[in-house]
Image (cartoon, rainbow, N blue to C red; front, side, top):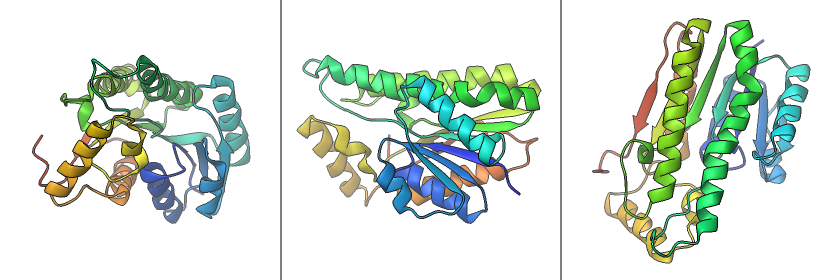
Length: 239
């Protein structure tokens, strides 16, 4: 029997698509997100769905412990939960900065905290942190979002170096433009419309399945092989 896969932000977009891909490949799942009904509506077998705020460290730990008791120790974590609230840095509400820093960085660290020690002790495991091309280069109206993704990329690579000798892999997935609910998080109309207009100009963004299939491929590669970073963008996307 395949071992447990944990996916955060699993209610829509890349998270939901990744859940479907791993389920089809025969993995038991722990799906975490705020919208329980959307995860349950996926109708996946051997999938434990839990409504969890990723900033609530104790709830994350409890959900992981419950799933590991029911299935197996966590072998794969896909850290996908995140938000994007783009805007003009001179006018953006600072509360939006706080939300992005909290969810994109602290929430991701809470999930890592819940599984990393067990993986190191067992000398086996894979953590995929879903970053962004905005974690490799900067974009206008993305200042704090870029900061959180640059930070997540740095966290991923630093931990990878620290646990590599324990046979634990850390992978940075850095998508370019992907059509998901993420863009709807921006309260700045101009920033949101700018994103949508550029996506239309280049013939459309990627779809979540494009990223989900790549995550599954990287995780199912032999454990001796670590795909440290995957940058996947629409062919016509210039930056």
